[in-house]
Image (tube, rainbow, N blue to C red):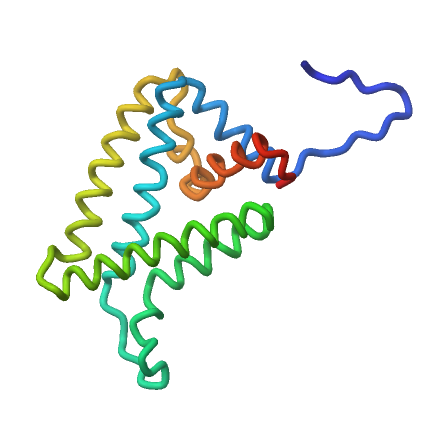
Amino acid sequence: MKKVQQKGEKVVPKREIDVLLDQYGTHHQNPTNKMIHWICIPLILFSVLGLMWAIPFPHLDFLGKYNGFLNWASFFIAFSGYYYYRLSPVLTYMMILIVFAMSLLVVQLEKWEIAGGPALWLVCTVIFIAAFIGQFIGSRLEVKKSTFTEDVKFLLIGPIWLLHFICVKTGIRY
């Protein structure tokens, strides 16, 4: 229901975050596609984080025992964190918690690889491919084409689009 502006009433422009979430949401109306998003978006985020973590990074002696924690994923986290913070500090804090948990899982996969398990990059590639296939199936259920084909920034909006539902459900102002 659209509100009709009364004479003398101040028009409050929508925040950029609300415009982006609304745009993203118009391309994700099918309930099955939404359910697929709740599974596949976190898996894609995790796999991208793991793949970037697996790219060899120069050894920096001054970091000592923390050397392995500064990697290409660190730059991805910093860039996306800055972008998210500009949009919504609350959603950024939620993403930081999620990325921290995902980073712990990536470190466990690294330890598993060292102990003789599969390579981190291989595990993350399989997860990425499976999740991307799921996303593709979900997008086929929609009338409108996927938003990331219009603008790459919508690849970053997907995770916070899910988080905004949690905020709305719990009454947290994002």
